[in-house]
Image 1 (cartoon, rainbow, N blue to C red):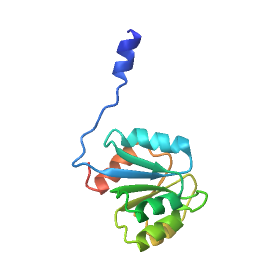
Image 2 (image 1 turned 45 degrees about the horizontal axis):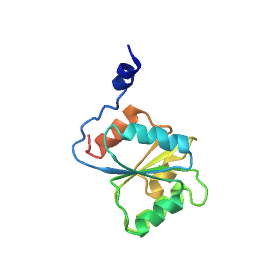
Image 3 (image 1 turned 60 degrees about the vertical axis):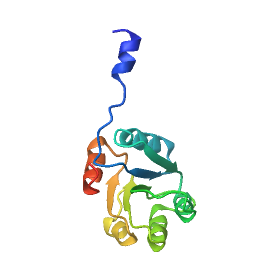
Image 4 (image 1 turned 135 degrees about the horizontal axis):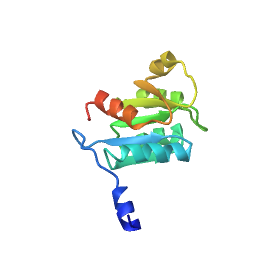
Length: 138
């Protein structure tokens, strides 16, 4: 197989979602953001990234964007995921906020803060499909 054929066989397959949707990835780890973007890009091209909870809050406060799903890391500098979730909920943000964490977290604390679900990161394609199904997007 030539290099040209090999590269074309690796093209990203777009999986049809029920409707167009947008996602905000909030994580200070650039590798995790890249992994999550790659997974989500199979379903949508409307993906934005920020590096901490404060940036997510500021983005919503500015009115510049609204997202169907927010993937929220728990441990970040400046403003962590729990604080950001509480702030977003206080601002009236009612969309799905999914916690993602590399450590064991008390899920009751995450739910109490306003997160809808929590997954261990990095996400995989099955986790993404489950999240999208829960949001009635897939």
